[in-house]
Amino acid sequence: MKTLYLVRHAKSSWNNASMSDHARPLNDRGERDAPEMGNRLRKRAPQPPIIISSSAVRAETTATILAEAIDYPLSELKIDERLYGAEADDVIAIIRELDDVIDCAMLVGHNPTFTDLINSLSESQMDEVPTCSMAILRFSTDTWSKIGETPGELLDFDYPKKDMDLS
Image (cartoon, rainbow, N blue to C red; front, side):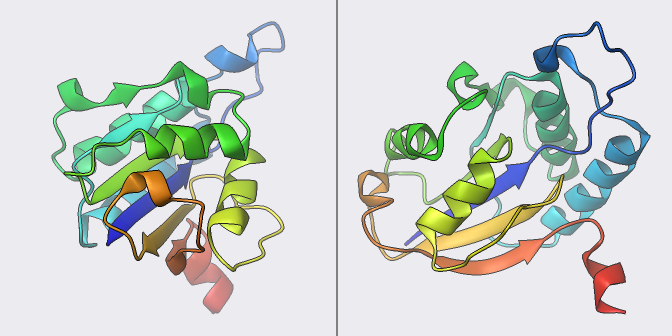
């Protein structure tokens, strides 16, 4: 079995119109939501032994906050420039490169790619995953190279406002 966490970066700032998209930082809501999702991640099992993030500042910052919440060594955080601007098939190719010794992995990236990816890797049909959302998928395979060939099971989908949506 392989478990995959797909996390969309936390809410980013649009305050500086001259700043490149790649350099945009988290805004106040993102700075609040990412630690909350880190707390939720800490209560889950399995914990990902590998975290791979897009190179965009907002994604790296989100990944760092999540990593700190689960005591993941920041020196082990992988930054993959291919995740920035990637299409769903590009991300599947990155997933397929993972070492089969690892049974659980986390990717931190962007929309609309992650919505498309969740929909293509599972039988769910989401319109748009919110910022700082976390999809957890499980695949009945022993090798990452098979990801995308048969649907995975969406074990959980969590996002910062989920508790408020239930009340």
